[in-house]
Length: 288
Image 1 (spheres, rainbow, N blue to C red):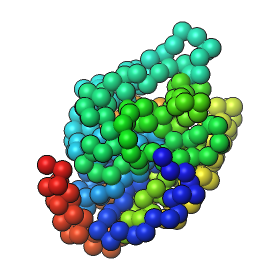
Image 2 (image 1 turned 180 degrees about the vertical axis):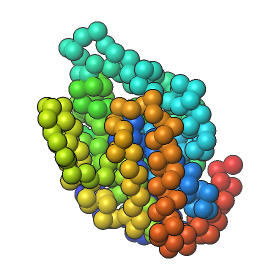
Image 3 (image 1 turned 45 degrees about the horizontal axis):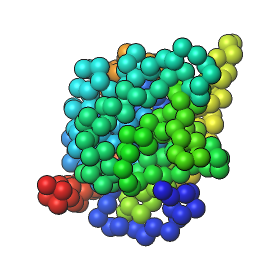
């Protein structure tokens, strides 16, 4: 477990390519489309960091599942369709109205070792520590399912995750772009699915709350944004929101198209293709 201060002491590793995935609920499905586009261009990240939905997608990708595999999980109703993952509680007296039990069961089913060390790529998960009011990075040990769930535990919606006397919730609450965890990488590609938007009309309280939360997320993401050499921002948020899980195919497509457009306008990113592909082959050989 690493705190925000400890992460500033990593040295650069020249053979690594980082991928930082933001939180964003259903909008995070765009991450899958972005990864698909990157791979089609020969870009294979070696080290991943993520908050909330970014932690979920990132963990399955780090475990060796392809973007196609992850999309199939969604289509088969296994991964994060709101009607399945949100197991509602009959009372508000618990720390949340729903649990992550189905998500934790799925992780243990598809990643049987349930440990960070068993993953094919290095994974860093961002969580928010309510005791210290700081974000932390979890990147080693067992109980992988617990830490992924903690990173996606939206306060008031999902139950908090307790470790000893410490309570953990959604990492995006305090750092929605945790690129600090992979600052040792020679290059970092960031994917932000909640880009800044100027509000037009805020007639309803829920609209004000939504934009206020997004503004908070934008603010805590700025340090991470600055660490990303390349920053891809899918615009699914123009049509959908954090709970539009039924629109997963359209949101995936937004991410896919955004990445291809970004690559076309920023061809320098293609220089990462040959080196990362070579490193990924070596990494897969060591794992197998």
